[in-house]
View 1 (cartoon, rainbow, N blue to C red):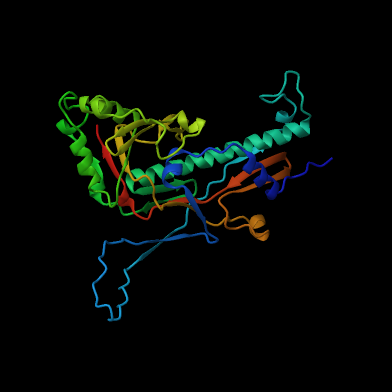
View 2: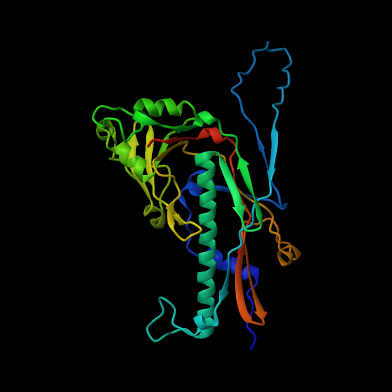
Length: 343
């Protein structure tokens, strides 16, 4: 009997039932999504000023505001499409979580394996999106490179003053923790942001330096930890993100998220010894270019963030699973953030 290939509608239904995991930077700064029906993602960057409404006499006609110049930016994002095969041997063996001795038949095991593959592919795309989000927020740029894809840099035009590196005796791990007060540093850096920053995100090393200061130990408010923070952490996210409390008007967070590099080595998303100053909310989005797949396009599927598919080759006989996506974080104001290399 022939194996029934699962249609995309069914696969998308399965994906919707899978446990949701949203990495920290995506959840905090790129919570909205926008899909395009073109290969290119186009966005407008407008530098908004602070202009006072002009005074006029009550009976004088108002004059139209002068239009600000806008800069149209476009980028064709690199594709990601993790691909796996459903190995026949996997359908004959007991799966993890299945009762000893086996309780599922091969057809049921196939569906369980497909569900696990979809979950793994979804997470691999989320981890790549988180990597892109971290690069955008921390550096004001995203470098996109890959197999058969010419390296390109998406530059969000962050001001050089918003990327700070402490050197020599100014580094937090060299100053006297009993007498040094980092409050002035924080206030000075906050002034560089175009808006209000009220969140400090540390990597583990930067937090170690910050938390050793005597003044921090005295002023740190731990009583509301986790209760009044700006996001609710899922159990998965709580393992890699810690809300430490408040320091004055700032929420303090420590982010220890990791991913595997091309060699399979685990590395932290945030560079060692770095601090991010950020607003509690942004208008930034995760955008997706059009799906470029003949079958998808023939069935009217173009502007979606994910396109899972399932097919079979006959010689050799292999069943395949694939999820396609074309993501790109879009930042409208890179100067809303300030990053500091504190040591």
